[in-house]
Image (cartoon, rainbow, N blue to C red; front, side, top):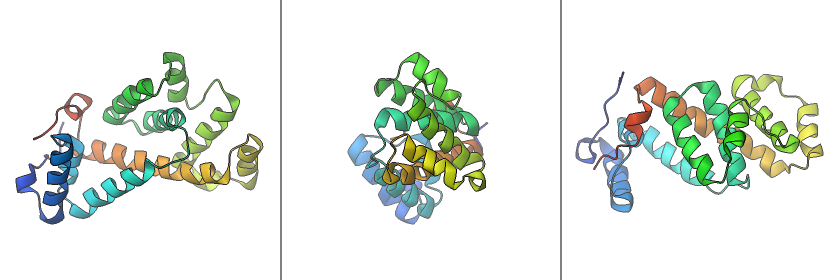
Length: 178
């Protein structure tokens, strides 16, 4: 059940109006999540800036989608899970890759180590040890990639938690608002 209503750009407060109008001018419409986030100009601006920044990751796109699938499976956001299923397929993930990612792992041991750590960053960050980071390095992951994992997790937590709080459902996510 929807708990927060999406806003039309004309009805959005402060900076949200400008941000939504910018999205409309570039994409032709605004998705339900952004339109609903518009209740808080600070949240909407922060989300858009963070989302843009995270597009410059060194984490390969297919691996980023595997991490997102694992994290969203844990969070339980159907809207985000559906979006990452589609994005994962577009990034070349097979159905087997997707199924493993949703279980928090991968057929590739190197990727499995990173995905597993990402879930721990979400669920139990205080449990991460020097040995865990050393194991990632032993798998060949750079400090840059390791440092980017909390960002991928945080963006997924933000969107998943927001969608769950707002009551956004997967079918609604694909309807563009004009």
